[in-house]
Image 1 (spheres, rainbow, N blue to C red):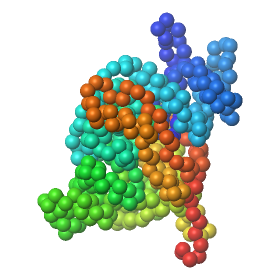
Image 2: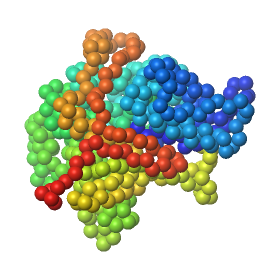
Image 3: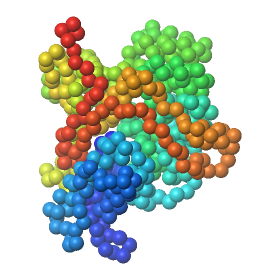
Image 4: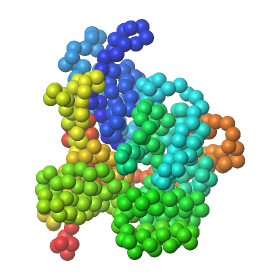
Length: 455
């Protein structure tokens, strides 16, 4: 995850006393604002949980009011601190840290805990209204959706919820919803009907399709996603292939339709909005797609020719996301009240040949989403390499799901559900510098060198 504290703002409490609020952004989006005292309390709770001092610095308390430069220094220190916590294998996935982020999100948006209706969309635009709590976690919302569809509980973690935006008939992937956020608050705080929560499969390897297709509802969900991606042009098909697929649709042969779709270009990929790359030369327009253990480039060259190429994730030594903030008058903002524009760039170091590494960059507002896709592809590669499998619901998950299938009345998921880690993650993680242009890299444990025989 990419955490940053790009700015601060001065606020007043109910008594009219002013204080400095630190704005936490996660994966490039504003998540919450917190006071220093709240982060200090989090630090104390984390120390209590692990039984020792944390291995990274937390800025100390000060008796006197902070000057402007001291506020900026503390902002930088708190940003480094929360990045270190999020990247720690134990602390970053702890319920203490996740609960802190969820509570801070609720407090920031001032949303009470109550029964609400939340709309979740299927890839084809079909809307499903769920009766949930405003403070249900992402996993609880996912459970509610899949219980509504009567999907086998064994397939719970084969799917995920994504935040998307629709504009001018085009759909953009914003991010995958995470366990530390509250989906109802995330979507309602945007105050824009162009945003939707969409249910899609959460894995990359098409071999997992076989598991999902054994379930009738799972088969329907995969079929809807494949058919919609073909209609949107995200999966490429010739006229003849379209005819074959249409024939299978008319026959109701959903499983055969999916298997035919699996042979098509970009099946199972996520396509991003058109952006800019410096490969093969600076300033080239490119359409980037992520899937099948690679980033695929369709580059429009200055002579209007289109050149296609793929960059395998196993040959990326590392990557980084950087950002810079601009204002209309060229002055970098210090508070969120300033009018600002954040530009993002994903850069990865790629093994072009046996002894040649080259940095390739993509300038895109979806750079963080691209980075997260790379991370999840490597996670999946390392998981399969270790002999692991996709996370299954715990006994408590299974019991909760069974109860909801039998009793659809009342509030869903009132109990807290114990989580089980997916598997060891294949990364050495480092920080994302947020709005101040950080440039730390994510090392890739799936990186493989090549020899003469590979060239």
